Structure formats: structure tokens, C-alpha cells
Length: 208
Image (cartoon, rainbow, N blue to C red; front, top):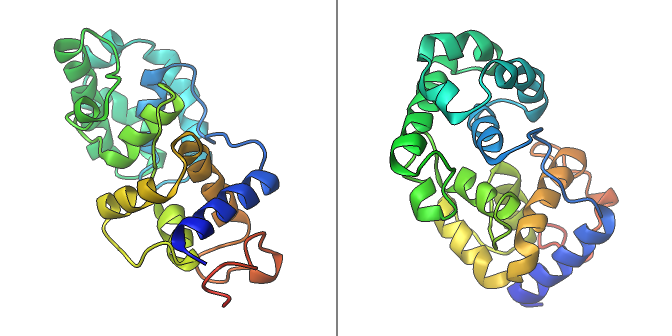
């Protein structure tokens, strides 16, 4: 079975197993998703979702964040970890959006990755979830599961992103990545994958 065939089988198997392919971060607009994703670095989505209601109640717009200080934002996000770096990034990010992009979250990857604290993973999430463009979000679940499937033997996130783009149908790629997160949490865990319960066990290279 070729890598392309494995990828297509994986897309279908995960679609059957997890029909609802949604981001687990809670948000109501592009800026909120951008900030929530920044907060999720080395932090669980569940924890982020506990923190953001109060944060977004206090800071409702780009102007609110840009006009604040890292110290004030930090008071709302301390439980997320690395809060000093994240709070600084959030304020600087808001300033950049206001000054360089007219107060609107950029709608292309090249501009998104110019924002403080925003890498290709977050930029792809915004492109897929907000702007409905083909995107490959390479997080730890994506790296682990696609490697086990035999789709690549890479470690560099950017190289993995481009490798998967060649294998995945563009309109399926964003949902596929969301489903990898769900599958990685429930079945294909890092330390003790439950291969006997896996919907991809018949073609996963780890099982062959």
C-alpha cells in the first residue's frame, strides 16, 4: 500500500470514527481563536477553555489587548503556564494586527506568521478554521500518528506539513488534523496506544 493510499484510508477511517471534526478550543471570533491557540502551547485545551471566558470578557477587541500591558493580561492567564511570555506575545500580537493589518486577523499564512508568538501550526489552524482554506496543523498528535501510519519518518514540523499536503485531499486536510487530535487523545496515545481499538489498525505500519 502506498503512502497516498494509506493517507486516503486514514482520512475515511477517521471520518467514520469522528464525524464531528471540531476544534476543542472555545472562541467566537478569529482573534479569540488566535489567542486561545497561543495559550494552548504546552497547556491543555481544557485549561485554556477555563481561562479564556474571563480574559475575553475583559478584553473584547484588538484595541483592548493592544492598549493593555503584558502584566495585566498575565493576571488572567497564569494557570496556562509560560504566562509571562504568552502575555507579552498577546499584547504585541494585538498591536501588530492593529498597526499592520487594519485591526483584522490576517487571512494568509505569510502574514499570520509575522505576528509575535505565531508559528505555522497556529497559522494553519486559523487558515483552516476561520478562512476555510486547505491547511495542515502539525501538532504532537499529528506528528506521532502520521509517523506510526508510515506517512513519513520526519521530525521537522514544516517538512511534515509539506509532506502531508502532498498526500491529503486539500478539502479534507483541516478536518483530518482535528480528528488526529481526537484519536490521539482517545486511542493512539504517546505511551500506550490502544492498537486493538484503532480504526486504522488494518493498514497502520506500526501494526504490520
